[in-house]
Image 1 (cartoon, rainbow over the protein chains, first blue to last red):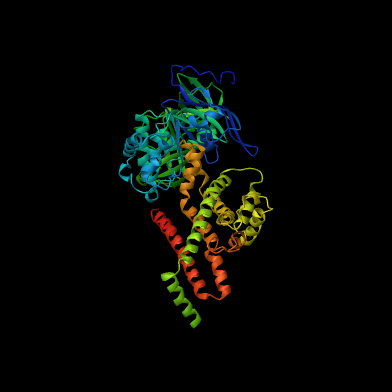
Image 2: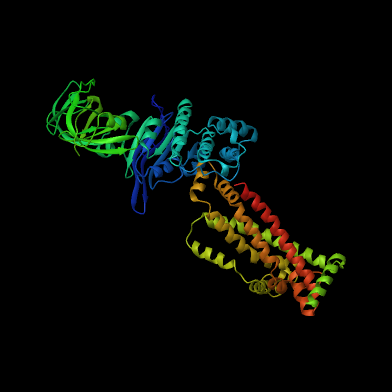
Length: 375
Length: 233
């Protein structure tokens, strides 16, 4: 690893790495909080790192941003290990936004200009750039306002403009939306996503929110206890988590033991508690013990006997054992030989007069199910 | 009571039509204490910022020493500066004992720990993640400290007020290292002691009024700045 550290890597045709971590460990008081073998942030891509609180994801971001030296391992910028004396130079090609806007006590304009002033740009260069980015973030009209008088959403937009105006080689975002109220948050996520994609800004987003990661991330890394358990395309990570911990974290609620009874044609047939379940694109051999994963929003419930219009390969009869209201929806626990969780609307609960004990047909597509190895 | 009224009347006439000696004393006090405050700020702000932003073994001890220094008795400072500047003292060759310079030195010694301590507290009060954010935006160490100090400017005005207020009304050190020499090192406070001792209450009261007005004006100006800053929040 150290032998090649100083040689610039040729761009390998595909997306080249802007920042990389190699064998990075961070230890606080004997307890490892980050332990990552290799992680590359590729040019033009948005990498979302999701994980519960205390998973080490914020520490990982600080290491990536050269704000905290790792206990062991190295950080590479454009293929080169970052030397101590180059820290400031390389850091000036990055920009960060944290959960709190952390604005200085000055006007919004002065805040956005801050990083450019640190870099010694002239006023003539600063003014148009600041104005342009404040406009893009929708806070152009607030330029002369004192930062302390801005609302939470305005302040965070200003903080984002302050980072984006630097046109960083990599933008680091640490839970930038989590302090905002719901409508403000959703609007900002959409707008920021549009800017990041349009300008192809290389970004690392750390969040505990699956929705944010799914909306914004090209790649998503699931982090737990300091380790990256899985890194995959956003869709893939949510559709096909590789292990039970990741599956639970990305919102898979039905995880049950089963056995492969037939495999072929890209289709697995499982026996789960006596029920035949078909799983598309699953890898496995007949006789293998596996675990079946199904997301609750992929399961639909219908009344038995009703003509089913669904094309779902898996239609299981069962009984509702529990109905748990969960925000705008209701979580229905169905016993169909094994416990299956379905997410249904309040409307369908009413229409079907769902009550605990009601017999139902639970259906889900073969493509909505996937298998993971038995741990 | 009539003594007070009479003294007040005479004090007023002294101030209005006085011989100029009083104004000379005022000017000297102002000059000496302002210079000492400036020195204290020049030393105390960097030192306080450094103490707030670095960690080293024995830091706790230094911080405790600074906090103790904030309550340094002027008489004690006067004693030690006198010993230093005494003809046979370590800095005796400077031959500045009983000059305004000696008072400036003594007052700077009194005010520096005050400025250091308040700066330390003000800078420490700026959250660490704020400093991290500045570094993340590409601030060099010096740029980071500068922005943090600017951020803490309102509490730091308190450092100026406390420093100046502490030494303009101080008497022990001025008396000991200045010597209360007429026309040379006589300050508002030392003159007041002398005149009261001589029973010249009118002069003493005139001086007291001047001192109070001076302290009021300085604090009023600084408070105006502080409040303007605060209302902009």
